[in-house]
Image (cartoon, rainbow, N blue to C red; front, side, top):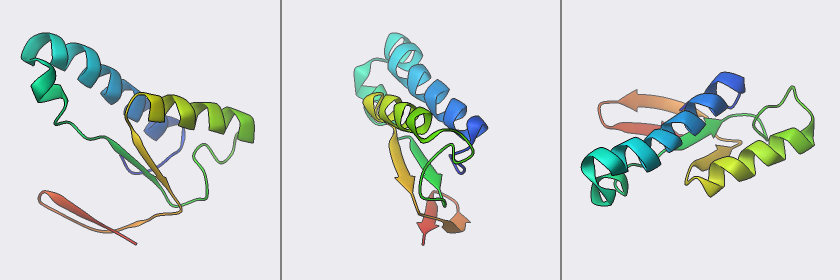
Length: 86
């Protein structure tokens, strides 16, 4: 997920819930364990316009759900099956 604003954070959280609940229920934990969710934000933290404490709670929640939160990182190239980080 590119962008750590409200939409990107919500999408990452929903994808994590989908992976941990629906995918496990329908296809099993072996399939769910192969799903990697990465949230990339170029700014130093997610939810930059919001209070830092709220951003920290959101980051901690995402990480507790298995989302790899990367801040201070930009995407420079996207191709089939890969993304290049700067």
